[in-house]
Image (cartoon, rainbow over all chains, first blue to last red; front, side, top):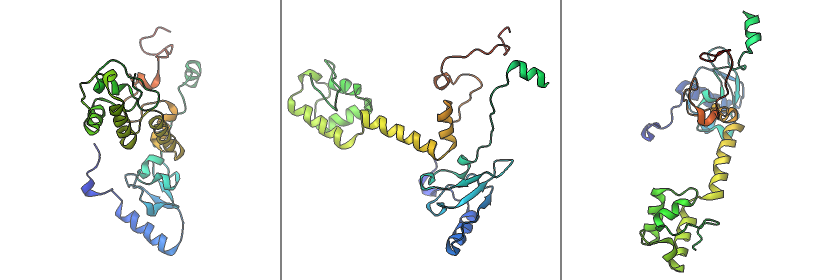
Length: 93
Length: 125
């Protein structure tokens, strides 16, 4: 079920203020954040975020197309390197 | 035989059912189109007058995206998700379910026919 329109999009307050501050000063330094659930608003475009995925902070450069998505959608939390080959798997053990 | 929305030629069925043969039109839209065009929904497609057919076609053209245009739009939406490297785009790329369904078992629609793996539970290796 989608979010009630009455509430508007969820934007992390602190992160938003930080972006505003960077926008007024014109700086584009990467912003480290844990706010994966934060919706990307137009003000974020052009900034680089380092979005926590539980382990590290992959760089997410925000483009216009990403507006309306959440930051977490671009910072994957799982890594799948393929299934183990049976022989290989046994050798490793 | 009447021809609506490009190549589609629905046949001797009642028009409200015949319209569903157009890609992008289901039960709901079929009835909505007919009530807006002012055409009797129970009439057979073949019995429609020239005028009624044009009326239906105009309503569809004006309000609905069907057939090729719809397919193209869907494709574009998916391509967009892929291009921005989002999680959903990634799932599309890998041919796995996009909306968080389980993949331990089932998910066969997206994953295709079963690929049997030797040595896995239940399969004698």
